[in-house]
Length: 101
Image 1 (spheres, rainbow, N blue to C red):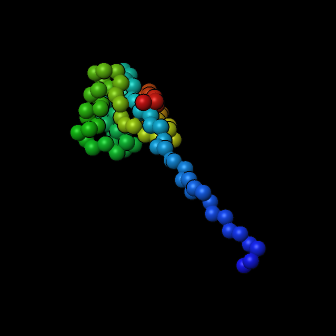
Image 2: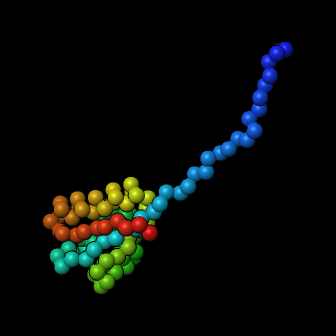
Image 3: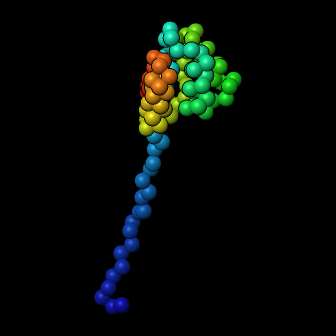
């Protein structure tokens, strides 16, 4: 092993991983979508229990919008698209938006 020198790395740096940014998924009120359908959507797409779904549905109905949850961008957009698809399939104009926190 003569003539060969080994060098040691000075510092092993571990890259810091940051949490993905979160976005709020919000359901918007309209005059045509039934309260029962909003509850179905909340339970099927967002996996809310009946009590939580009722609370969010009443926010949508009384305040004009209701925050459903906080998700990373990809998940938030996917859930919004699922809401729109379910509403379209059932002939309701229910809208859902995604906003940064």
